[in-house]
Length: 406
Image 1 (cartoon, rainbow, N blue to C red):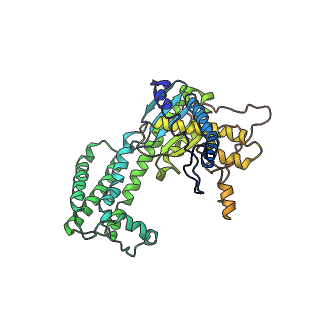
Image 2 (cartoon, rainbow, N blue to C red):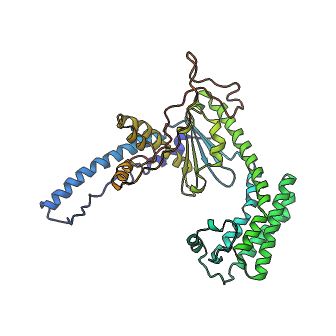
Image 3 (cartoon, rainbow, N blue to C red):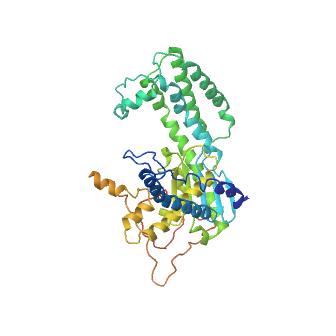
């Protein structure tokens, strides 16, 4: 377990002021270089003075965020990966990171990804002709043309496909020695055997098409569903076990204010598996604002800092929004949400309708008069997950948090 200052010190010092120096405002009316005392120069200096106002705001905003990063606590940071996720607990001056999910998760998913591995090799050589198959109307012809960029008659896919078959065959030979449940062994064997058969037939014929690949992928679907069940069971057990442990460590009072940032790819940022498991284990009165799914570029060199940097923006924007726009709820919601502050004005000028708002979550029931606003359930912090709370939910408008200064 490392100290918090040691992992945040250099990261927060670097880049606090980066990118905050504004360039002179460029005029689009043909103004250009002119003598130092000429009208163009005076106008440029005037515009630079105005732009400096925003540069100063950004500088002070970054300084506040940099300090806030070192104070955020408690924070759970989840970096989704092939092992079920790397979990980091930041609490006061310490952090601890580990992978809580059992190996069955990675093993089951590894075999389940076989059809995608085969697809990735043959996809560039797919024909642009979409056969009459169920779901054919769901394939965008332009998307297909982008992916199938190679000559469909070429055969340079055979060598990498056979090399991948060697990897699959090695896994198939070792499958019975991996200590997996018999049902999982059987489902993995089915997927591997069907994949090896498809590869052999395609390589021997020196051809394949969308129909033959779909026949293969359809044949292994039941086995993959079995693998998914085992992977989900392993992930739920591992994540819940770790949350119980960390909750007991930091105590109920701290746990009810827990922030969680789940880092993932865009493709898994909605209904992310770890977010689903974590949500019922958090304070329901705050989960709408304290559980943040953050799509991020991969791989991240410092995922914890990225999570804390974004969380600091969210937290300070939550407070700034209500104080900067005390009489304009729509503007306040935009400042602390993903909506740009200019969005409504641009939509109005374009005559475009605003998108429908997200549904507002139902608030938690208010406590009875004279009762405490928070009541810990029996056994809370000692293996209880999910938890039940009686605190009323704060005002929730259904909009997630935003990225800071626009």
